Image (cartoon, rainbow, N blue to C red):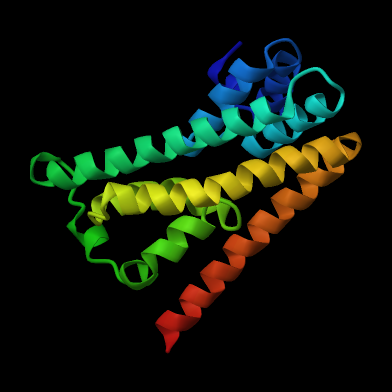
Length: 198
């Protein structure tokens, strides 16, 4: 298998879902952790499928929710730690990140708590960059963790329970969630551009 095939999203999703059948908790943990760190993973689909497996009695629903929540917050914390490391070492890096630290276009300084919170379950496409930006902007870790964990708890419950109750319609459900996440991020971008134009 070449690198191109390895990175094909459809094949990755099929491989993860196939592996999920026999190794639900480890595959769920890996997919959620890597997705929260920022690697392109079909995280929502894996959590929905694990919820569907719980409905069939193959795994326990509390275990799915806990695994999802724990590894999502671990991934968020990893991204935050990377942002902190970048902030501390920015003078020694070959790339200048000062312009990112001074970027005020999204209103991160004024709305960091709500951005951290909502990027877990509404604007999921920006969750990983928000983790790093929070570390760069020197948000305190307890504050970051409180808002990130609260949002991840909602997302973990939401995805696990949707899979549990609507798992028979997994493909349609995943399509709707993907479309909603894309629309939410698109709306955020339009609002940001509108704010900059004023």
